[in-house]
Image (cartoon, rainbow, N blue to C red; front, side, top):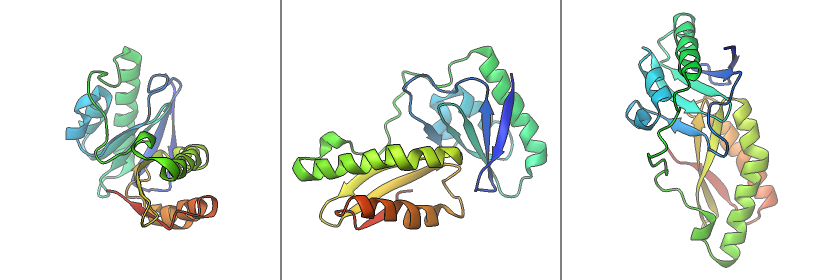
Length: 194
C-alpha cells in the first residue's frame, strides 16, 4: 500500500493520504481529539497508541494526525505510516458502525423554521461547497453547530489539522466570517466552538 504525506498549515499536524478510501461512501469526517473519543474507531485508537499522538481526524480519503509539540516528526512518521498501512491492508472496519457519532450541541436544518431555516440552509450550503473542500485540502474539516438568529452568530468547530492551528483564528474570522457575511446578510459574526 502506498501512503503519501502532506504538510498542513499546522506544524503539529500531518496529512496521510493512502491509495484507498479511509471512510465508507457517505460517511462524514470524524474528529478524535482524545484517546477516549477514539473508542468508536479501531484505527484512531491504534494511532493513539503511538507515543506523541494527541489527536486524529479521519477524512473520506485521508487521515490527519496531530502530535505533541515536543515530539519530532522524524521518529513518529514511520510508526504512523506503518499503523495506517497495516490497518487498512487488514481490511478492519475503520469505525464501529453501531457507535453513535452525533456531536454535542450540533443542530440541523430541521431545528429551524421559516426565514431562519432559509438562512441556515444558505450557511450550510456555503460551508459545504466553498469552505469544507478548502479546509480538507489542509487536512481538516469544519462543522456547523448552530446559528443564533437574534445575534446573527454562527458557531463552528474546526477539526483535524485546523483545530489548534496557529492560522485557524484568521481562517475563521477573515475567511469564513467574511464569506458568510457577504452572501448571508443575517450573519454578523462567526465564533469557534471548542
